[in-house]
Length: 290
DNA sequence: CACCAGGCAAGCC
DNA sequence: GGCTTGCATGGT
Image (spheres, rainbow, N blue to C red):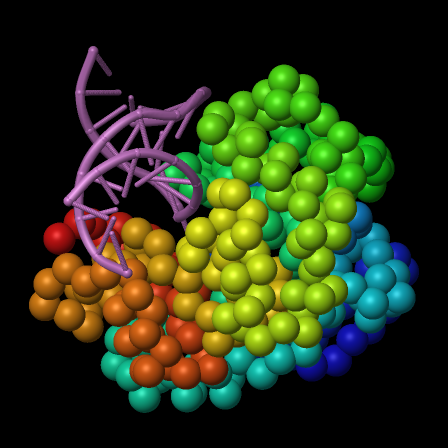
C-alpha cells in the first residue's frame, strides 16, 4: 500500500481486503453515514472524515498526514494484514464462505468510552434506532465541529454525561437504558472504571471490570473489548451469531457460553474477526430463526 | 394493533 | 448456577 498527499486529501493506493460498505455496515459502529455518491462521512476521536473508494484506491478527504498517522491509520486498522486472517480462517468451510461474502471488513479501533455507551444502547434495540439515539446524544451534549462547511458533533465525554440527571438525559429517548448510560459515565468520571487500567488487564479481568457497570453484561462487555480495545480474540454472541452458529455447527439450540467456547476452540486468537464475518453473513442472508 | 429489536437485571428456584 | 420476566421506545 502506498500513500500520497494530494492537496488537502490523502490517497491510498493498492489497498486490499478493504471495502467501505462492509466496514461501516457490519454493525460495529454507528456514526458513519453513506452519502448518495457512495462515500461515507463519520465522526470519530473528535474528528470528522469523508472517505471515498474506487477499487484499491481509498481517499481520505480534507485531512492531514498527521491526523492519518496519529489516528485514522489505526482507527481504520490499515496497519494489519487481513489476507493472512482470512487465509487462516478459511480452513473452516463456513468461515471461507462468510469471509468471501464480507471480504472487505476491517475491525475498527474505536474509542473505549464511545464503544461502552454505544453498546449499552444496543441492548434489545435495532440498528437504525441505536444510531438515532447516539446522534441525539452527540447533538445535545457533544462538542460542535465544522467540516467542509457542515456541522458535526463529537461524542460527549464521561464528565459531561455524568453532570446530567435522568430528566436531562431523557431527550435522547434511550428508554430504560438511560440509567445505565449514567452509571457508566459516573463510574468512568470518578475512576471506578479506568480504561487505561483495563488496557493492561488480562481479557477475563477486563471483562469483569466492564461488567461492574449496570447495563453491561457479557455480550456488551465483549463488544467493547473487541471494537474498543483491540481484543481480537473475543467473540461476542448476540442473537444473530447464536442463530448462525447453531445453524452451521450444531443440530439444536445452545446456550451462549457453549457457543463462545466452541468459537474459541475453532478460531482461537482470530475469533473476533470470525465473529464479524459471521455477523455480516447472517444479516446479509437474513438468516431467520430455527 | 400486536410483536419485536446486537440484552440486562432482578427475582425465582 | 440456570431459567423467566419486565423493561422504554419506535418501527412494521
